[in-house]
Image (cartoon, rainbow over all chains, first blue to last red; front, side, top):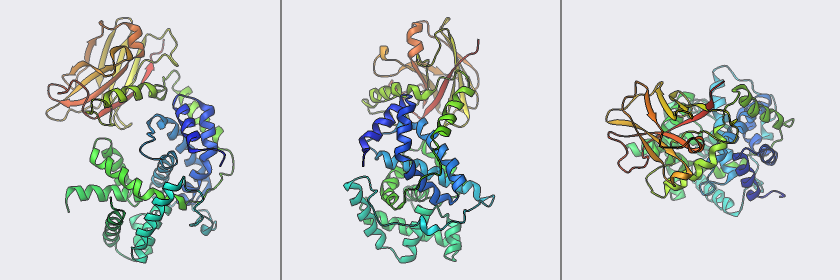
Length: 184
Length: 238
């Protein structure tokens, strides 16, 4: 990888000082990662490209808020992207959002984890996967559909043919079990 | 279920993404002044974010950066002379560090704005700052005239919780690491005027102002302790 996490942090720090060129470097080094998140959630390329622009405007505005000790820069940016994509998804659901007719599998899970930031993150992921493995199959699928694809309670209820209240109960039990398993 | 569990599950579902639009908005609003909830969200982000490794990189069909740049610069041009608060982030970060040393103040740091030397033409002598809570509704509008050194704070939609008061602060490198109180805004429904004659205009131009919510009688510690209000400074048109 030609660009290190440290480089990204420096681009962001310079962007916080108003350096647009540094922000451009940050964009080009991270846009594929963030776009992958947004597209998988929104499943519409045109809308995803619009939202991706909003996300980077937000990253620019919040550049000075990033605290390296709290999360990695990639996680910090990914969190902004996921939040914005889910907001857009929830908002537009009211108007029957258009879903591109592309192969969803193309975006679906890949188990090649070369993209993980570093060894520590790989450990975190392994631990989380072990804990997810302790959930019943349905509930594990539910957690993944929610986190990775942006399924709402109502959409999960439809997918699993259960009342929304039941889904909420299952989600809460699963999340508590995960928290306990992760030991924090 | 205890309140703590409720908050933890709300945070968990917020991060998981399963809440509806209204609930998400409510959480966004609440976390800015509920430290428990904000900390619980951070905890769940830490627990679940390793799943981000399952997202596959995807290239946008075209380079979107020119569009992003245009949005950022367009927003500035549109507002004409707006002094972007992001240029002041550094200053705020320094203040934050100084204040954190006292241990009292959360990341909620209020802070607001100020007269920056960056993008501000030197002839500007009058500025307006709009203080937002949660970047939504304006709560206060502050105007400052560097010639008379008078500050007027006008409440817009600020409401005062019982037993609380708003307190105005100034921070500047020349005043030391901690913000200095400029007194209380006794009444949240009428304008308050303050003379800043004790400060020279050059100091004011580079200072940062903030408004915090404090217990009646003002901050017990002499430093801002309550939730923050943010704002941005706009030079008044000549």
